[in-house]
Length: 255
Length: 49
Image (tube, rainbow over all chains, first blue to last red; front, side, top):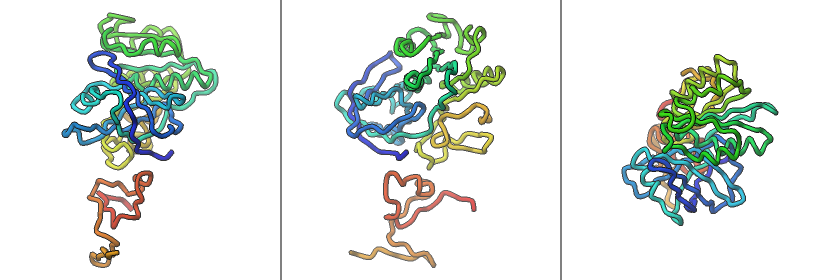
């Protein structure tokens, strides 16, 4: 799919909590077909120290409104500048970048697992799966109840299982501690979150013979295979997270 | 139009606009964004044959 560099208009900048916000971007041109797992590279204006674009997962797509939503965590000067964008301002992005999650076999019992900001691509994936006849469940984990992101949005897709590290809502612990993983065997798992969480999910899936894809969050600069700074070790050799991923099957990763 | 072509040894360049080492991949990565053929040349960071 051809990559584009387009200006988008900020339609809404919605604060979720002190650390997360959602940018809804309205396209000047009709959106191409986008796939869950793909990402965009955002140009940060008026932040002189932010030289490189910021890679952000596509959180949601509305073709009727011709909008893309990005879930952003304030992690530094670039994302803090993005958090101050106002409706009507312009955001330049390169998109669509990267591969996408696979569609599992029909009637698969699918679980989407996300942690923290890693829930970002799972809303688009969940809606995509539902529109294709699947009935996915969602397991999401956060540090505490104040950091829960869009619970109701995920609940509209399927059954939601929740963990918080302090036990302030849902089951206490990490996503891999949730009782549903002991009580129920899913046919297929898609996952995005911190590397440590995804490795733990890899361990669970490998031990139980469950096919699993993970979306890596490696640091990257260009986003389309030029700088080679997001390389990941796989059974097929070193691959770029930005063009060969960010979605990988766990059996291909050497991590 | 002014001819900006020049030579380095046996290599002939049609203009002196050349990407800096390591910034432009193999050039093909930019096909969706620009017509790479307008460049005088591309300097690779490294390559294997």
